[in-house]
Amino acid sequence: MNDVDHADNTVSRRSAAPRIAAVIPCFNEALAIRQVVEGFRASLPADAEIHVFDNNSTDDTAAVARAAGAIVTHVAAPGKGNVVRRMFADVEADIYVMVDGDATYETAAAPRLIQRLIDGNLDMVVGNRIDDGQNALTYRAGHRLGNRMLTGAVVQLFGGGLTDMLSGYRVFSRRYAKSFPALSRGFEIETELTVHALELRMPWAEESTAYSTRPEGSHSKLSTYRDGWRILKTICKLFVSERPLQFFSIIAALLALGAVALVVPLVVTYMHTGLVPRLPTAVLATGAMLGAMLSMVCGVVMHAVTLGRREAKRLRYLAIPGVRNCNCNSNAPR
Image (cartoon, rainbow, N blue to C red; front, side):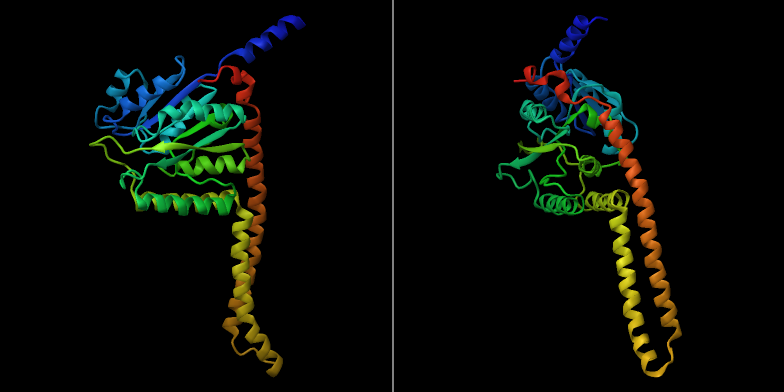
């Protein structure tokens, strides 16, 4: 191939419009899914694919989505995390628009979120939910408080300035989707999505979007306490796996402080009498200090393992082109 042909092919690749796919996880959303599919059909480019992933619905979700023009895929393994894993594995696109199928998110904002992703050459844009405040059931106080607390915990542990970690409205680049391992099973998947971006130091942003009430007769599948507890456990697990040195250093420090607190009275007694009258306490203090040392060793070893895992994920991420390689700026949806 000569230089002219190579240049022509390069220009052709860069002038191609990005492939956009809307991916919608669903469970018993027959009353809402048509509105979501039609909303994306109206706001996204005509060649954009709309995929509905039906997670064992017992109503007519799949039939309604198919009639609305969506590509429907059945996912047998229960849980939103399992659906997201399947979505990113099966769908081939340059830009992924993920949204829940409950018709509470602003589908008309999709072009704006996509443009933000392209303009900033980002890997994730999160739709920050803003409700009108007219209906208390739109964004319940318990959910709002839980979101604020869990988001704050993630920010403290992993950094970043995210304000709505649990939003189900996100736009991803291909290199994000194809480098995401998706280990979670349920609603805790949003936490894993956020931490994945923060740990690989991917460029991301938030964009405010309207949040509205579900269609009449439709019910939320989210349990405030059960799912909140699962999300909290996921945050703790991710802290251990992604920040092992910090985690085990905290344990080591607590054990060491306990050992010192136990041994100081023994040392004082020994200095005055030359005796160690409380031998079990001395043994306990020694065991606590040995535990602190062992904890530090575990932290160092696991930290090295985590760095290797992170480097492997980073190399996988770097092997995939970013959104600007498609010259998306001239072909973005309007």
